[in-house]
Image 1: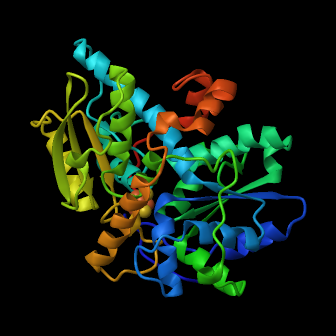
Image 2: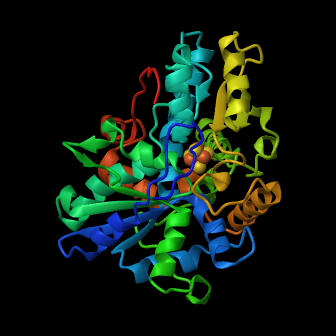
Image 3: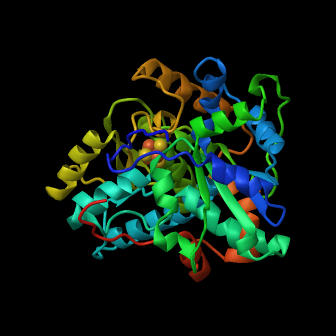
Length: 386
Ligand code: SF4
């Protein structure tokens, strides 16, 4: 068994590849896979490619060769996260501006190591994270309901596998609140390294595979979903959508350079159509602790929204990625690739994702609807330790 240390020091990595092999060999099961944004700029390193080489199409092709019935993209669910989290942010902000009591700053909640950290160490701040589930868990909930219904199969027949840069995602998928009568929304989580092992065991050479596209509809995504993989990306994606929804205007410049960068703790002020939004960003739990202590001490910088990623650089530096041995240049190369890929995409705002729009029109109603709340949101509880 392979053991690696997780960002909160409480989890260990278990090899889950055998469970995937079993599921793929079961003729009774339909097996779908989702791939997180950060995996595509790191998987190639396990096959001798330069750090940051983008292998999205080759990874999709490899997953099809391995036998997955549908190859989908967590970026789709990241867009969905923005629809829910952005709506929640605007709702809290409106109340705040109207002078009502409201929990601010809102904290992003897509990093499970960070959620574990706040649940176990900052009980007094337990009410401020967004209630939006992480993209991994939104994907699982949508796959086991909306997509299973499209296929006209019961949820028990569908197996959802995640390819994540992250070890804490394994723990997240096992949380009780993310299952229905014992059937989890996400069945199996593999790290990027485990996927590389699977591909090698199948005698596939990633470098020689022809690029292939994700399946529809849960493989359709925008650049906003892709930048979830880097520090600052979640907040930038939320700002793009919040600005356009709040003002009804199209952004002249889509990049929010103020929130980009590699400093461990950053703050910025952003104009949200006449309202100044103060945002804070931290990557690495030491920096997150400094930011949370500041909020506990009365939020002197009047921050309205905070993004925290437990790993250095965000998910591109996750503990499930090919080892980078502390080399910051590797992290910077992965980051640069995410941004350059994103720049070339036609769709770059979550609210323009046609598959997300269709999901709302035909299934969920609107962001924060009762159904959306049931499937896409969660709650947090004070824990002594994990
Ligand atoms: Fe996982 Fe690290 Fe990303 Fe958090 S920042 S979701 S711990 S890879």
